[in-house]
Image (cartoon, rainbow, N blue to C red; front, side, top):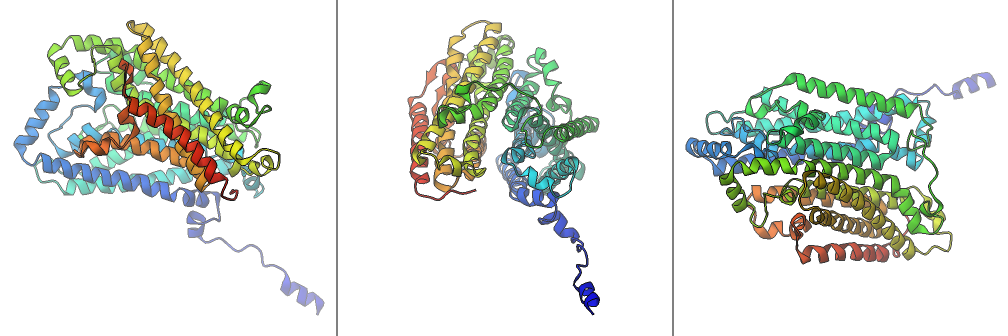
Length: 562
């Protein structure tokens, strides 16, 4: 009898996990990653799709007749290659798809790339830093399986976002009213595939670099390569010396793939896919061969005592963010070096067309286009602000990791006051911004010295990046103090991307100038030419100091959160 009862109480073995739960639930590493990425996936695909439709609707309304389209094409073709970097290649711009690809389509892969750079750089490095990988490793999964499932989830999320963009492009083509405006399925698929693969290449590079140098370095270096490749590829026609550097990036490889304009280069997409797969394989192997708790695969010497936080919380935050700050500084500095180094070629090409130089002076009043500083103002500052804002996001994330990782419970058990932790953390973050700025200045100085001319003014103008970075950091610290540090880095990244979108879309939709004036980047003047706007300087400092003050106030009135 006892034997029969015991046999009935024996467990029947683990029940199989339903397929849908493995994909969308919490029963697998893949499913959990998909679940964690669902908002970003829908946001990227949905927002970019809506923007494509909205922009196309505006174009149809502004240029409703074949004559107006022909006039638009004539004006665009009259623009010398020197301005190609401000848009794209001129191919069939009289059509709806050709104009969308020329004017706006080249910017959308950058937004998708930013998402994957931030996400994939933290795929394993971020969890290793938090210590959550040890728990996953106890499930019996191999390291390669953990990494593969996580990466496959991000690729799936990217595929879904790209599919949403594909549907949006088809909707744009369905709204066509003029001959040639219809967009075939092959063009929509070619654009969505191109966008997805460029984002995957950027994310794969960030993933690999994160395994060797840490998450912050992965974001900084991959972001610099992405923005640098975009700029270099844009100006390669005007400055031929840039072509070899542009061809080192995926933007150069796919320069002849312009699907919305009817120009295809499918082999170039195969090359991008092969490189992305190779980078992912290298990253997975690097993760499998290093210690589980290590955040990098490269052994580094111990930091000096002053940089590892043994003299206070500010020094600890600065020391913790030091590798990240160096990587971001080197990335932005190399980006500035390439742009400044090619400035003289830009000026030489411009001098060959005095009529167009006068046109540019009318389009950009107050900017001396015939100088290297003017070229830096047009080509470097706008993307430099994005890089500086994302750098601030990673630095703020380093400060926030005290609470999100659970270390803050132990720190506050010491005589460390809550207010001091926030203020000292802000000082550490601002110190990291200062280091990034110094390295960026060094890159600008080297590039400007190569071309000759004024060097001091562009170097001082680089301070505008630091002002924007500390302002964004202040916003992140304020959010972290009031709502929880888990939101801090995200708040900085969102504020940075929204600022960039307003800079791009306000002119596109002919929004009132008051809308553009809402963003901070509209109030710095022309720093690369020595023309500063005091409003931007004051506003940046107020956001930086005020953000720390608000964060201190908010943190003193809430409980700790994981």
